[in-house]
Length: 242
Image (cartoon, rainbow, N blue to C red; front, side, top):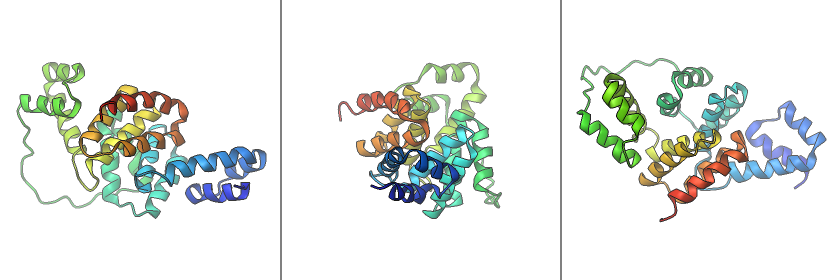
């Protein structure tokens, strides 16, 4: 691959920003390496490219790197992303990363208020034991951070349950993609325990090992190899018996 071909390949996803021209002029061989890396992440593997851009978008939003987030927003839009999908993508991260994820992400995406359905039904909650059973099923156990909330902060616990269970169910986007987006962000943040929790959940709801690997390695573009080094251990653990 020649350096001009590498630039065109990278530009497919990022356009032609000034940094790319600088990189190519000063490090043509390294630019070829970046092009190969980006191609291997974004154009190869079983996950849809749009889902990978969702992953990279939320990683950059969490890092407060607005311009990079905009690049992946534009790429996802070219691949047909909808407002409903963007809302679901951002909501997935509210319980674990806070409301700023929704506020900042919605501003980049340009989400607008819509007319809510005329539904006066009360959104009733399950019983306490049923909510704990949800966490048992979703995480393989009821971790101490959940049981402590249930015991000492019941209203907060109910809100966390409601947000998490609603956000991570099948919607416009399948649950497996939502779990894999959490895997990607946890990989970028080098949070192996979080990557493992959501990797197991992704496999339980139908993701393949190849899709899991694809999601983890997508994070390399935004978090670098160190995150993948941590996540590779989680990958080996959760796929050991499958």
